[in-house]
Length: 245
Image (tube, rainbow, N blue to C red; front, top):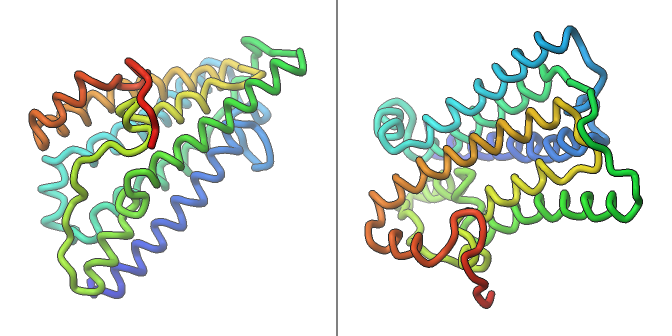
């Protein structure tokens, strides 16, 4: 694959990711998009539950396996290094789109906040969660995370150097602010249905498992630097407040 084609490919992967990310906000928040976590139910409750669990697993397993260094080492014998991250983003986006398309809502209400102030607080937290996700990606390197930097450097014939370990902004408070943002967004809702609860619980369990696997890889790569970071900073909740600067 030529240099320009890889850059175009990475750009297409990124645009798909951006579209799926924006759709995810409406899907979880139950607004604007045609199919949401709480749309009209289809089929029996038990069958829908099993099918939704299958869809969640169909996303979680490849998403986690493709992020492991061992898989990447084998995968890049087939896919160019400059396209590896973009391909990861592409596969993850397609699997999420499939989940959104085939999701079977379970509309039974678990809780519903009726007071206006309570709804405002929860909806504010919902948006804070999504802003936290985006802000955290740009705090490190958004375009490296989505594979555009790798493809661009390849296109201009410059060597790719992984970003050095650093802890900007919110990374001084928690080690995984992106995942914290997702957790806040998934749980902050004034109306929680069984389907939304399933989505939130499954993703919470996946996040807890995924960050532990990621941290194992980070320790293997960075050694004592990351171990010291683990001692000082909480994984998803602050151990203490640092001054952000």
